[in-house]
Image (cartoon, rainbow, N blue to C red; front, side, top):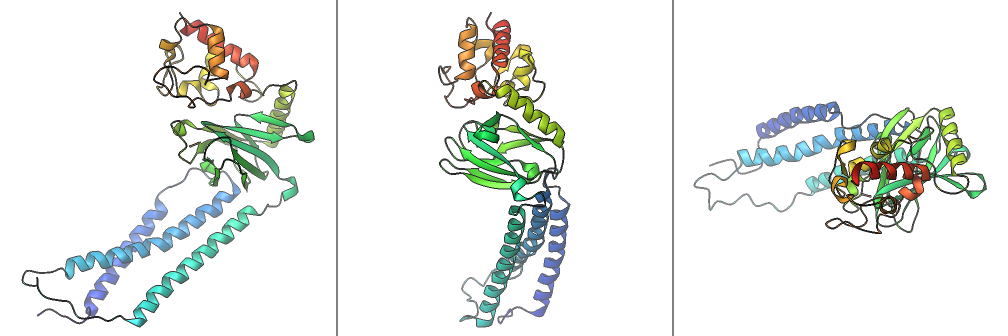
Length: 355
Ligand code: CUA
């Protein structure tokens, strides 16, 4: 007859040994894997440390549960002839129940407190002082992001690319024109939903110059996967110049250019270079583009004229090609592109796609 009352010390010792080895391997693996993109903000460091701590704490818990389950299946499974046998009668074990309630509760409260402290530190403006923090309004819509820089006198400079000066705190005010989106620059780590009707917010300090993707992290419709933009973190002087340029260009109405201080006027360069890129959704042999999210320009523009093309760029809902859906193409090109850029794009498409 097999042992009926409790598990022997040998079993427990074996489970502990297996669990300890598996936990060590799991933690090593969890810490070795390079989960995240480059750290481009001051806050990224604290967030990555939080992640590492969560890995270190949760791997042994997962391993403990799995070890006990798998070990029990292996060692204590029913054997032939035991079909009618019953386990030992157990009427609860108060000490065990107290322990398995108290330990997870303590771990949870500790981790929540730690996460709260990290979040509070991140949300507190750093040395640059909250008064000097830069403000950027971020507006999501199906399917693009637009960035507004408040200026003196209540005016805003608009851009479809995010420019930030390195080393300066920035507070984002995030809004949505239509459905739920989620503003996320993975290199900065933080993200938050863009919710129609309210303004959400977070702050950070970029620490690394470079170009980082801005993505939407909330499923928001057919164009969700292409709802991308670019964040440029540049030297403060370069940022000031970019903003001054934009401000000068936006005077007298209309939006600013899309690509900073030296926007390409070449229609082909615009087609493949302006964000969001025409070439990431449309096919056009001349530009080497073969995307199929939007209509194929080598086919649908035959016999069309400049007026039609311009209207399609600035008001994409005006006419929808058969088989395609309204609302996928960003509706803000009319706002974020300069008139001469729209003209250059139109001329280019007339030249290469209408004949
Ligand atoms: Cu916007 Cu997903």
